[in-house]
Image (cartoon, rainbow, N blue to C red; front, top):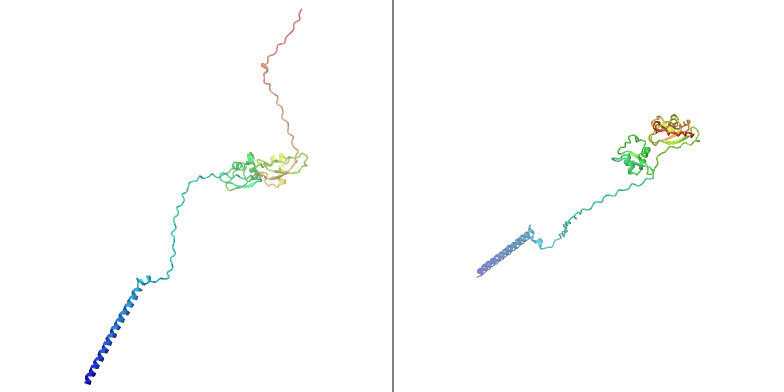
Length: 252
């Protein structure tokens, strides 16, 4: 009887151990399945689609709104009347001044432009001896001296009658002047003027040039008065009708 009891105990003990093993196996398998499910769930939530990111707030900076500029229509250009520029008046100069010759300039046009009057060309020639008074040619870009309005022509210095022989007077050369003409004007000689001014060429004097003139070097020649021409009678002698003379007769 004791052997039977021990056998039963062994079998019961075996069965209990087997049941415990099965229970542990089941629990272990269940734990593995749960763990595998958790791993798969984590991989899915953090995968490419990342559904987990929508559940949690991120520190993504708020994008700055870029405003699209509104196209402002350009104002319609209204045709406006173009004002004619007012001609700027040239200020009146108080002394001769430098001027650059422009396109289409001439001595006459420059004289008119600056209001020099009828003597303007002669004044310009006096102040610019480099201009040939015969041709009066000027070129664009030339620098010339323009007289101020109201300027008078250089005039010859009158010779006082009481000046001693050889007294020097200053004379400004005029257009068309020659040394011979100047010498005659001052009772001088060409040689005396050439010597007084150290001239190398007696024909090279220029308008506006200042010369020293020795006066009264020669005795002035008296000007002969004009001779009177006999007047021809306008009525011919043949046409004159003689007046008959009345002879008184004696009465007896």
